[in-house]
Image 1 (cartoon, rainbow, N blue to C red):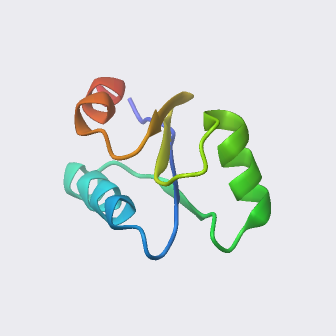
Image 2: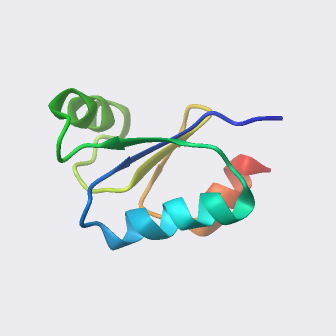
Image 3: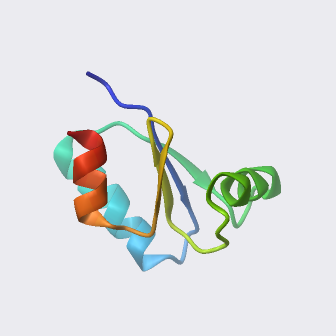
Length: 77
């Protein structure tokens, strides 16, 4: 089953890079939004998560704040 994965990130975020690298290694396709450049996506991220920090990861509607690997693995299972 293909998951719908969205990563809200910024260019300078180390944990964003780790999350994206993890998805690449696992062969999980994702859509990335740079909230540093796209104000509407930044607002969308805050609306979904209540958080200003990145990464915010949306897996099939489940919101994970930060690169929480156990929560990501659970959401993908």
